[in-house]
Image (cartoon, rainbow, N blue to C red):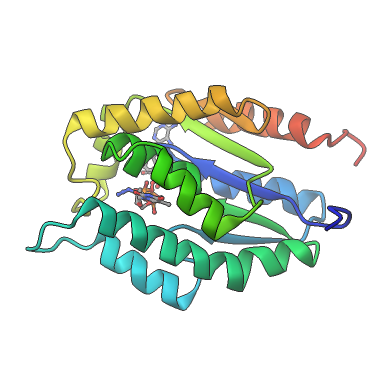
Amino acid sequence: MSQEGRGKFITIEGVEGVGKSTQLAAIQRLLESRGIDYHLTREPGGTQISESIRELILSLSDEDVDANCELLLIFAARAQHIAQVIEPRLAAGQWVLCDRFTDATYAYQGGGRQLGVERIAELEAMVQGELRPDITVLLDLEPQIGLARAAQRGALDRIESEQADFFTRVRDTYLALAQQHAERFLVIDASAELVDVEQELLARLTDKLGFTDNE
Ligand code: Z5A
């Protein structure tokens, strides 16, 4: 199918508390200032079924959650999200801005849970076909700093309650993905002051999108 007229698919990633929600608001303002019609969504989630699966994935339970169960739930939520929301909107020319996508699965389940890349790549091919983000913003931060910020917000969820080395593997996997897919990744140092992170992000994104000053 021709890519002509298709919307752009932009994702944002990083360890917990890295500032995704905060920086997503800045990206929204950029798109709005350019008159771009976009849809904001998140993973796991984005549809009624996928949000229910999100609750299952993140809630603390007395039962140990099997890593393959977690992985399959994430891709089940993603399948519904793509079919119902992402693909139809992109096809209709709307842009989609998504808080996390499959890079998070490579980082958390592949790296954090050490499931490796192969089975994730198989599920990615099955559920997504050719669909990949056009641009991925990776907010990079020492996991300890992000977790401390997340802890200030209140009780930690099931994944946030993992040990420090889990998050070190998550971060390392994100950085490896960014090297492997350098054409679509923008890696932003998220340890700076909020305003400085925002400024760098917007400058790099504006450039990547080919926006000019008089647009
Ligand atoms: N997950 C997975 O395992 N596999 C998958 O495939 C997918 C997801 C898709 C939910 O994600 C969980 O799902 C996540 C991975 C897993 N793990 N957990 N738990 P989520 O994205 O919904 O949850 P999150 O990672 O915890 O994101 P968050 O809560 O939305 O955090 P954030 O958006 O990155 O941070 P924030 O709310 O913008 O900022 C946090 C605080 O820090 C806030 O008070 C800010 O004011 C402050 N902040 C932000 N930036 C700065 C700077 N630069 N300086 C100082 N303070 C700052």
